[in-house]
Figure 1 (cartoon, rainbow, N blue to C red):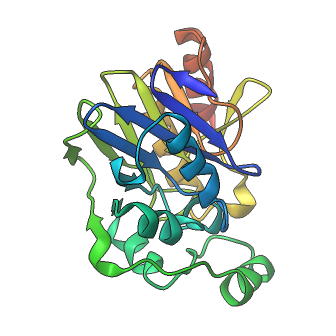
Figure 2 (figure 1 turned 30 degrees about the vertical axis):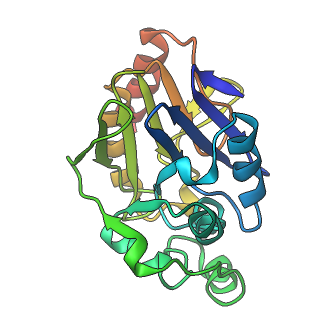
Length: 228
């Protein structure tokens, strides 16, 4: 699904990856579950570009469903990986962050590891960084769901990649459920900051990307968070 000209949402079993196409190279936001690399590589072929045109992969956080195919995609393309410092530490171990109920976290920690990413392929990002592609990508720390979570705002096309900071269900904007959120207060604050950007497209990790909304829709979501 093309959510904006040149920006493709790749649905990968309940989680979204986003392939952004520009003349000077391709950018992928998040890398889905393990063994989903073929979806990305097939899409690159479909648009008539070589794999090596994928120059960078932005990772919102190190959960299995957002970084599971990262190592395979990176090896196939040679892309540079952009991630927060704590996220990078997990990527090189193939490990997920701690934010689940204890029983689920035990399973994740012991049985659901993904392929590790080579440390030399990772560039560390920080809140407030501006990355020199897609017209300038603003890096925004958005902790809550995990403590090291980043969102990526591209003002030129008006798209905000929010990972798991927000999601959509039946056309409504929601937070990730409390039971899998590391810091609920931080999650509320992050979501409110993101909503004030009033993006044309809210590109979430879960749920259909939101477009065609009004400022009133965003304000309603903002006010709901403010009351909580």
